[in-house]
Length: 260
Image 1 (cartoon, helix red, strand yellow):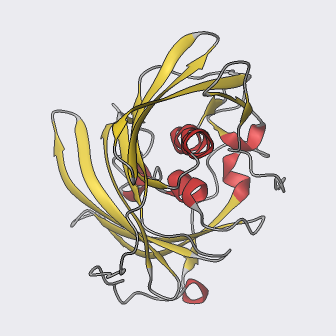
Image 2: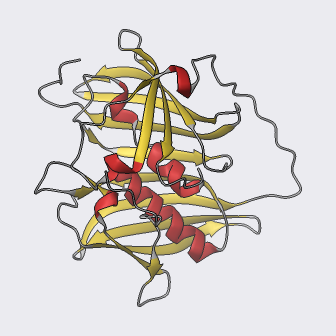
C-alpha cells in the first residue's frame, strides 16, 4: 500500500488569471494497469479547489459533466470565470482540459449570506459503526492509486432496494473538507453491483460543512435503472451524525454487470 501524504487534488496557479493546474499523480487515478485515468471525483475536487481560490469564497454547490476520458493525463488545466451572482453569493463556471482537450465542464455557486442560523433537517440513519462493519472491496485499481488512499467499511448493502451505506475515511488523515467530500461524492456507481464498472455522466455536489479527519457515512439511494443509465442520490454524514454534503448522479451502466 502506498499512501499519499499530500492532498493530491490541490491545484497550483497557472499562467493566466483564473487558470489553475493539477499535476496528475498516481493517487488521483483509477483504472487497470497501463491505462490510468483521473477519477471523476478528483477532477471535481480540483475544480472546487480552483474555484475557491479564484473566488476567495467557499463552495455551496457544483455540478460537473464528464465529457471525455483523461487516460494517461499528466496534468489538468482548470479555467475559472465568474458568470453572475450578487454581493454574497457568486455564480461561477469552470472548464477542465487535458492536452487542450475539453474533458469536464463545471457550474458552481460559492459564498454565504451572513448572518445566518444553521438548521439541519436530514438525520443520519441508524447503522452499525465502522468498527462493527466489514471492510470494503479493495480489489479495484493498482497499488499507489486512489484505492490505496482510503479505507471503506460496508454498513448496509441492499441491492434489491438499491440502498448502500458506506463508511469511508482518508488513510492519510485528510479532513473531510469540500475537496475530499467531492471525491467521496463520486463513489455513487459502487453502490450497486450492477452499476460497478459503469461510467459517470455527471455529479451534482452540495457542500454543507466540513469536519476533521475521521469516518464519513455515505448513504446512497438509487432511484432507477432506465435506458441503460442509473440515477440516484446520496447524503454524507460525519460519524457524530452531522450532515456534511448531498450529492446526486447519473451514470451509464456497464454492458456486462459484475457478479455480486
